[in-house]
Image 1 (cartoon, rainbow, N blue to C red):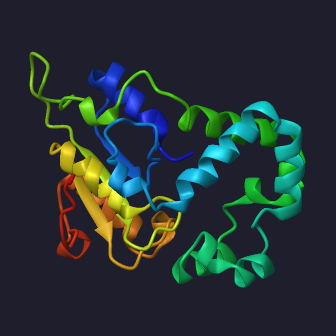
Image 2 (image 1 turned 135 degrees about the vertical axis):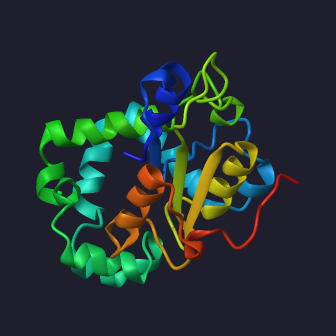
Image 3 (image 1 turned 90 degrees about the vertical axis):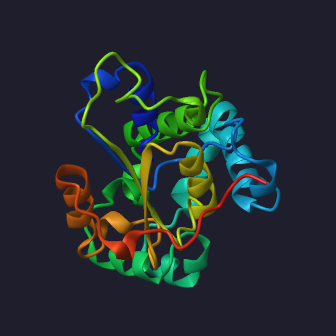
Length: 219
């Protein structure tokens, strides 16, 4: 979920990584480097705060809630698409059979629910480091490496705001940041995007269309 484990790999075992490409990775609002000005009016922060508290202390209640009100079916997505996804994401969910763990039937299975719950708790808990403080893992050692780190983000992502991703990448100049102009949260499933990710990571070929239009800096 959310590529959050990659940050730990970059901190602790960078020498074992040939390269990294994260797609719409989780941004933890508890990271000290996230400016308060970017979080002040972000409703997701409060939603995550209360969801985390319920997931940690009342897992039974959370299990009941997600099996009653989750968003897996096409009908529910069509009723409230602006809550989670943009138009392209909705089309992906309609035609891609790759999201079985988000169905009510699978979430009723305790093993599936606990897997997702554990992921959520780790991703949004207090970390022992801030990714913004990481040095370039491939040039800070005794030997330089041709490896690289990439982050891909949708400009219209309604789950992970692009502003937070841009801010983080501005602090970490060694990360190559790519932005899909009309992309939502499920950009990896868009036609051509997966190929672009692989070409950039493996061949160093970058398309101008995925360059961010502007740079957001910390106030």
